[in-house]
Image (cartoon, rainbow, N blue to C red; front, side, top):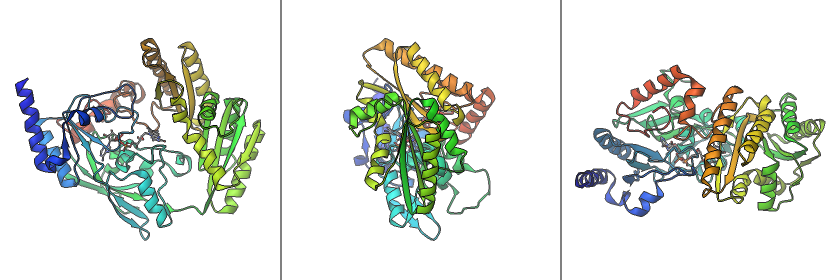
Length: 464
Ligand SMILES: Cc1cc2nc3c(=O)[nH]c(=O)nc-3n(C[C@H](O)[C@H](O)[C@H](O)COP(=O)(O)OP(=O)(O)OC[C@H]3O[C@@H](n4cnc5c(N)ncnc54)[C@H](O)[C@@H]3O)c2cc1C
């Protein structure tokens, strides 16, 4: 015990030399705060928490950790939902929120360069100030960091038209566990020299390297946007409307759905006039020039009506549009009010199978006696089945885990994925082999070993 305490003090002293004592914490409050992230029910126990400000400081800490074989868990804002920043093997939680500078927004090269601790909303705001768009917009954009977005390859409400974070990462500066700094890509649109490591780092969940600078692609901001909503008697009709919209030559910026449980919860929470008797709600939107928006919104409304929508509304003002999108963003807080514990999950199926998948989720929920609301990105086939329950009811928690195991198995059976955007982290590691197969998983592990031979980066997570 005395030896462990001495080792911990020694580690702390070494890290303090790199970042200064004021940027290292091992007090009970910090150890408690950084023991968890946004993932329900998961908790670890860090040895210390360090807040570096520069790439050199990150490299210094990694060198120490690698030499001592101490785990390092890179962390942005800790909003991930897959246990990605849980220090379940102890070690150093490396919080990157002091690396929060936007270094450049270039209207000539249509890029922005920033440090990983910049919040997504700040980067989007800096781009917007120059008439440009940074499209990735996860629901957590007011809190999550760009480094976290890249490490998770986050999606968002605009992914159908604009793609996900990966599609905007042009260059990455990253520190390897031995302290070496690499730069992959840059501000070039075309660059095929070498393996595409920046793409590999995208979605690597802190297991390969710590990203310290990001160069992202920007687009000219669209002139205007339109938003609408359609109610359906059931999700089957809504799903058919999605197929009809997508085959009508329109690529919407937004195509989101809520099932009946979610509609009811949002209305109970926000009181914004949603029709609680509806079986499903589809939210659709387009951006671009005003003429194209008018045409596409009309086509989407027609597609919904043709599939039996009971009511279709197109927002006439910005405030109305914001209200419609707020309904979608309110789903999680609304469901959270139903019971003390909310487990939000993430699975993807081919979009033609959304209705079938939601029906299977409801069967599974009924079989296990659970309330599962499902909402998500209909246009991407990305569903968020969300269970609400009382954590004191251990049997219900157990049944919820069983239900999600079944849901992931069904997603894979339908040619889908165990995660569309929230990552594998620690909570889905046991499902990964089923999706990827043993050979591919072994290759992932060899890649992990090539980057991180001592296995210090986020051990027990994706690829470990
Ligand atoms: C309310 C809510 C809504 C959400 N909505 C969405 C959504 O719409 N779409 C979506 O995709 N996700 C969503 N998420 C999940 C989450 O917000 C995203 O994954 C987000 O990108 C995580 O950012 P973060 O800064 O919080 O990262 P963290 O949670 O701190 O870290 C996430 C992962 O990235 C790694 N990491 C962080 N920074 C670095 C770095 N600099 N270098 C290397 N690795 C690093 C960590 O080790 C960890 O594995 C939501 C979460 C919540 C709570």
